[in-house]
Image (cartoon, rainbow, N blue to C red; front, side, top):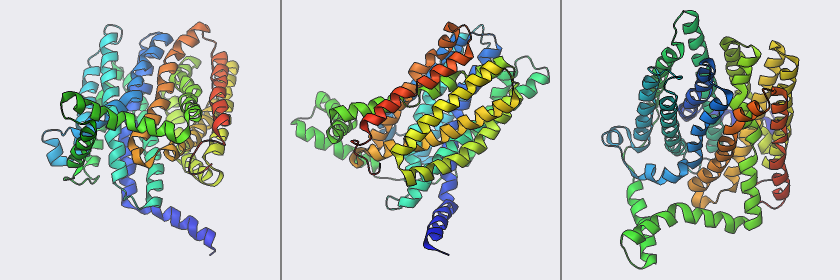
Length: 457
């Protein structure tokens, strides 16, 4: 057996580590809430007769994911009474947020969307805030599963986290859609409300699994945070409520931002931020309205579950791993150009489906192609922003860059339903426009490709 084969086998054996299973579960916990506030909420509102514009604007609740870095330091510092002592700092926060999501699902089960739309969206916002908050500590607990000197395990853990997220989102979607269809066929009038109670059981099962994810109960995190605050306050020359606040803001927000611009230069930094903000906007516009499109063109919840969720999960898992291999061999920049081009072509497949009418085969091809694209794009994007961060501010800069990317996808894509309405339901033209939306990000990437300072091109 040659050395090249040996290295491949060594890489595969990393995935046998039990910690990878724990990271997979953490990823699933992070991805599952998107089933609730994306697929399930959109289809629920659609089947209750609400307009595409309303469904699109309801997606503004995703905007909280773009700003969760603002309260990340709070999550790092504040301990949850009883839960932190019993479960550990990270798991305590995750369980608290899971309880909030569970209670929200129970509230949803009593709501009539047409009579209480504002309350429904408010509860959805609470779920989004809880989900965005738990993501902060899920990422931290994931990283803390691996020692700092275990490079291969850290890379494998990152891949497993992506696979876990899609597992929670895709398989959770299968459970949601099949359950809703079963209750509907059984003659239950409020079938979505009943479905949310079943999804609450999934939340409980995930929390049981979380108990097998290890976390040191006692750490010196709190004392180190206080030491940092004192150091900054000493530099300011005095200690009072004003200098304490300045020290807090400077240490958590100002330092990482200054470091980012200093490292890359102002023009290149703006190019990077432009690319990060724009890269997945076309995909987000398509994704926000896709389940509405599937329903309007005539596909059942069962068909959507099989192709978009079940088959999509298998495709995503396989091509996430392949995308990782391509990023390692061809480099992140080339992989993102490839993913961007693939993204544009995939969106055109949906345009063809809209123009030709309902076709189960074309639907399957478009959905599989979309999942392949998403897998490559996600792996390349995560690798890119991971390489960009200054190791002095790894967590904060990663959160900031990820949040900027999320901001592009959530804020602008909220107008997706309004755009379809403005086009008078012309889905084909809508998907062509989502193809064009990919181009500005690739222009930004072309501008920075030879100048950006990362570990690999």
